[in-house]
Image 1 (cartoon, rainbow, N blue to C red):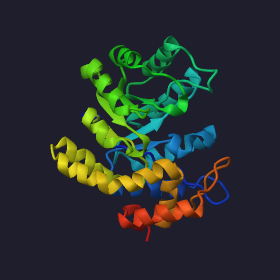
Image 2: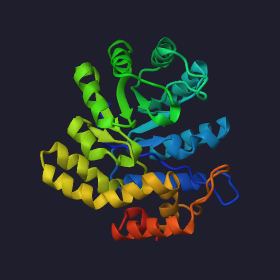
Image 3: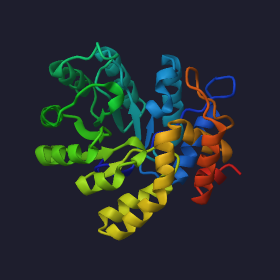
Length: 305
């Protein structure tokens, strides 16, 4: 990438048929819909892609299908998180070989009792960076249970060549983003937030240059980022107020199921199936999700109709 990546970089959901098998044609529809939503990049195989229920073979197939289908229309970020440094490195090399523009990875973790110390985390990212020539986004999320203090992140940004993007989605994300940007300076190329943009306005105030949401409503959220960075703070706040009820419902009630449910409703995919042990959302939660989505006239709700 010639210019730093900014804006909205949503996570693509992984579509399955009702029998639980991967829907490759549905994956292509997902990507086309997201491009039509006006996204700035697309993230594959992330937690909101149900990466934790995919086999290695399925991961490889989805990555190839997606990169070949997008064919450079938008930058692609491939999530490569794994506890094993060797496997994370292999995944990173495979992603770059297929044309990925960036990789995203969490620190190595495997439950509370299996978390390496700061040196192990640093070496994990160093090994991946040494194996590739594309940027790495560090995902700092509560899911891992791993503490990534600002001084460690800044050390990685300064000393590890390809570590330059950060997705901060921990509690008090704005304060951490501000501290990271202040301490890291020019080495913090892409400070982003996540968590479905539930803290977006505060994070933009702190210096975030973009957000990684789900694919539910990127066309609505993107203008919050662009207006804010253009100095139109009142417009950004007004749009934030428009989007927040659905953002909150997705973040607090639906999780990764929200995007799939809306995509199915709009004919983007055939099924909103989630793999066990995940369970479908309740009808009560679904009804509220679709009501809020219809009020915003989301692109995904009419894309396939």
